[in-house]
Picture 1: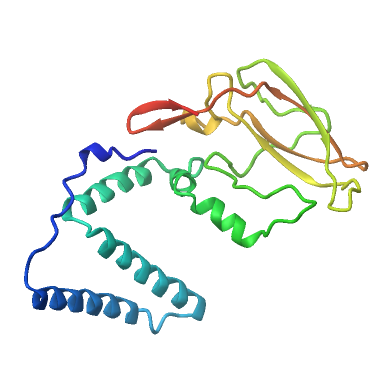
Picture 2 (picture 1 turned 90 degrees about the vertical axis):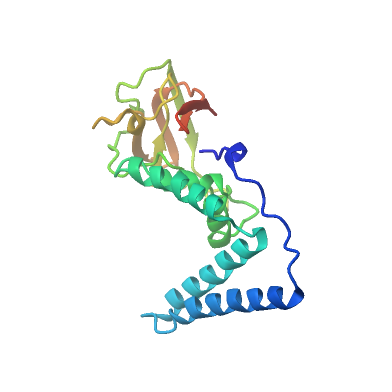
Length: 224
């Protein structure tokens, strides 16, 4: 995803009106924010109220900070709307947007603090999908995906260094053309599966050699 910043209208000019007007304008903006924050005072639970009131304050603060124009607000709406149109049960475009803005990774970092002896947690990304088939040890997760066969193996270990038996391992990848199965728009599962480590913590499966993936960005394909 990308925003064409060349299409943004010119930044609003600094206001040369009297100080009294500026103070009145700031007062109106604060009152608006306070009114919206207060609308969540009777939220059904404390956590929901905390989140929504903080969201309102910070979004309003952002709009005031950049002095958001009508045209810029409309461009943001026009950018987000297509994300909803192309999101399906198998393709989550809003997760991709969250990834681009860094919110996904920040949420992971907040909820899964780093441990010196553990692999760092990361995001699922936009192309994870529920319902992948289970494969046996040494099985093929390609499911007919186009590409050069590639064998993957390793061992799952805990922070103590001991093998972890029975660990669930979800795997998914793009084919040789750089597309995931969910990007083809058909009900087909390929290039994804899950398996469990054996009693020695080992895993083994066949896949296809990874290729650069492609995202559709504002009508054009971009290679990542």
